[in-house]
Image: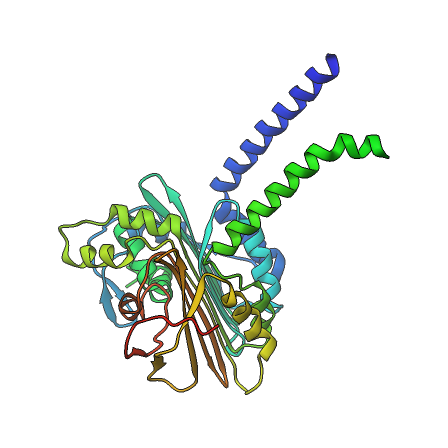
Length: 182
Length: 191
């Protein structure tokens, strides 16, 4: 009888621990991804929280993206950005993809993954529900730079992303890193 | 030994039933497994994987407005679709993917629920094979295999879909421009 009770308690504790771990993973995925990139490629990021917050305050302002204008995509105040500048991203990108997917597959759905062996560019877009909105994680890695952006999107903008995942994914990154710097 | 068999008989039968049921469900599932193509990413100059799963599709469709013309159009287009999955590989040289790679996909499309649409061609160069999956009389999936000397694309749409809808989806939701043309959109089972 005692053994059964101990087993039940152990199982219960394990279940609670597991739940806590999943919740924590959900909250800290942005940081985890940044850390994963740092460890895999031996690089260091620069955070630009001020720029991101300042950039996202006025949701209706037109953003200047690559010489043109575009509507803002991300919800106000929802942006997390980490930038890797002038660093070397050497390594097997297929192995990196496997590692990244393994670390995010519990809480995020991979929407698009585009890799270019010739230009050594990688773009990953993951999505997860966040109440009546969606969190989107965009990871771009090039030969000498990388960006990790997490934003919250309205359902309408999620559809934009689903309709043109590559284009909208790039716009999200550009919006988060270029917007309002002028 | 006999006793052991007697004790394990029921769990064994139950297990066997579960496995059989799982295989039966899998046989009707129009979702194609493309894991066999993973190794091509290392050879390809460009690799694109798109996964718009049913959960995302359903949620987005539910939240789209009927009042907004553009949103309404998308809502109608994706209605009932349970997933769009695309794997596209582009290579810098010929012969980077093998017949076995293509066969790993084609073999799944020889299942009883799949029929090849023989009257579908592409405006683009290269081979194009379009397959529809049926559950009874209803179409419940579509698969496109587009092959070129330096390109290999697999498009898999799960849910009720016809060629007209596929044409509209080209260039959207990660579906590449396939240049699909059809004379009569009637499936013919060529097996």
